[in-house]
Length: 261
Image 1 (tube, helix red, strand yellow):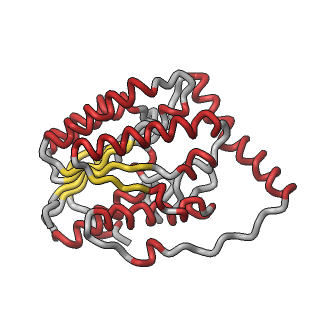
Image 2 (image 1 turned 135 degrees about the vertical axis):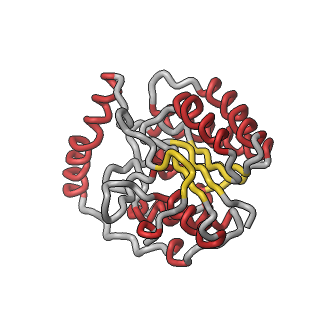
Image 3 (image 1 turned 90 degrees about the horizontal axis):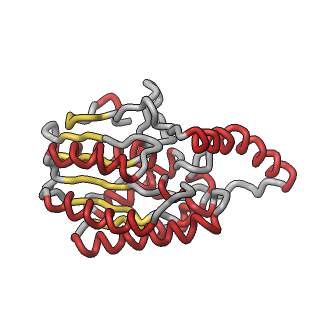
């Protein structure tokens, strides 16, 4: 095993929302699961840091997390950012694409292996305004694929997995992955690294029964009140869900045994 240290960089996808640990009020997510599996392979010398913070835009991730990750000189870095940017009205795809390749080249230039993600279209099509966000998402994903090819980064293509269109892969907020979704991402990452994962992480549960029309519309209204309205309010006031949130694992440290379950 050539990876003795792993640093995860990004936003809520990498922080682990919405996959909470049973205790402690901290999110687990795919990156913690990957770290746990790598630690089991390497032993007690393995170190892991997770710098990701929910709501972070691409410039914030690059300015705050990338220098910190490079300073740790890890063997492996995961990078996932840009999803929050493309939901903003003033999103500039050209600028992001240009910066994306430079950032990945910088991470690779530090000597680390890098993991990148081509996200599933299921994420965008679940949200309002998909006529605008889906083309943006496709452009962002193309930039990710080009960066992986140009730099030799490992690409995890989640769009090849139709299981992410399964509703149980997503949390009730329709934006973040559920526990099942995070385990599936972790499985794909470990397989891409050639490590292998628990087969149960890639099992697809039966689809739930179709919700009657009236019940579905009532659910949409509850969702809009609980999740969409606060999101819109934050956009209008210039606030972020990540305000006052710190990285859950800001330094390289062993993976705690009590959290491996």
